[in-house]
Length: 453
Image (cartoon, rainbow, N blue to C red; front, side, top):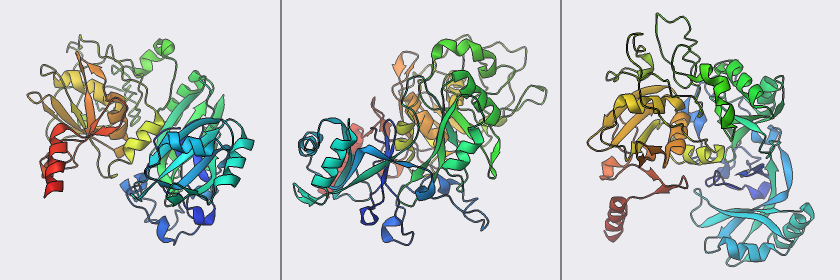
């Protein structure tokens, strides 16, 4: 189980199942009563706030998690109202009453700072049921816990599964709609939408799985930019895939003539430009990619023309960004307001140029603007969407670049691209090796000063 659910809150009064994504993603349930006070979104009323296209159209009925097509897990329990002093080891001692535990994870509830919640996974459904019947409503340490079953998707946990991240979904797209859009592709396995379980509404993205890498690639190429319920799809590799076959797709991923991958570019003299929108392909072959010229202020980098045919290509080989975990991306997506689309990249070598950096950042989406501060060893990239910036932050955290490991975080959404906490004199929110936000020494000192005041 992963940490992509820290702000989702259990609505146990209705005894709704909670959601857990096999093999590891977990989600808390939606309230059955939309008017319930607990169903009001806090920070996690996520991606659909980025574009209210469907909300203002009375003909668009938002999809709901309760009818989203999930099945309940028979091995994973949600534990709510958990005392914050309880550790995973302590919780494990209590829940071993049911039998051997496969996995256990305590999450921070951002909607209720007084308690935590957890997910407990058993090897056998019988053991999970015993724990549910034994401990639900009982006092553990200082709190009476609320326990329920979890939802699970049909996504396979096999290493042979190839997963696609499908973004920019309309608010009325549910699991069935997403599945119907991809089910006719060979080796299709599953598809599901990620839900904001606080409100019961879609977060605006989902995942589709295939058993064949070729079929997944074909689905990505075929469906990239295609309309689904009134919005064009944006698709990216989401999980582990075989890197040994990259050469099979080299021509489709180069920044050269086809321009299909990772970045929208315009070249009036190039009829091969498919202008497919965002293809955030993490395994794009960048060895022969052309360097982009410095962008003009206020002009989207994607609107800049390609270098002329006579211009030499970049001689430097840029390393491939690592695969991103969809749960890690989800965690980062919800760690900043949806309006923020600027990623911060730090610890950049001072001799690195825009031509070195931009091809790397192009992997993750359409770049609206780019600010590079060589003397400070950092830059700010404003992407087209919140999701694109989140993928960049996750993929490049601790990524080796020209002898240094990059540091990443959210940048403040301001026209001058100042860091997220610049108004307080702080620094951008930095990611550590485990893709978790950490405070810098300066931020810690400022926090201590504020507490003393």
